[in-house]
Amino acid sequence: MASSYSNYINSPCAACKFLRRRCTSDCVFAPYFPPDEPTKFANVHRIFGASNVSKILHEVAPHQREDTVNSLAYEAEARLNDPVYGCVGAISVLQRQVLKLQRELEETNADLMRYASSLGSETTSNYGGQRG
Image 1 (cartoon, rainbow, N blue to C red):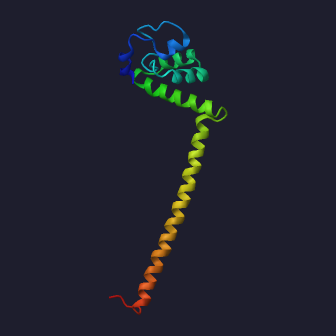
Image 2: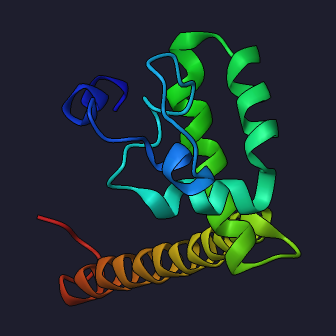
Image 3: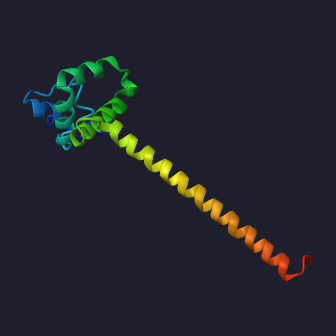
């Protein structure tokens, strides 16, 4: 994503556009908030604030910034959808769903084992206890 900014060199990044400021060549937001994704920055700004995001990006190693921005964007969207729990709420829902599906799988496997053993006993009784 950071390399795609070269396509937008003449237009300000979504952050600078949102903040109504001039986008300079050394803008820390430009590589991660392209002009065609204004909602991404708006959500991140609404939850974390531009100043805090700028500080975070300066503290993170350059090779980790894209992942950092994606994490911030995910958390911001989750917070907007669920202000109390954010992405932790989504994780909890998914964990409960995994547990339910694991129980279902165990029950289905048990049913299959019962079915397979009943087929085995029917085969034995059909041949008078002798296999051939």
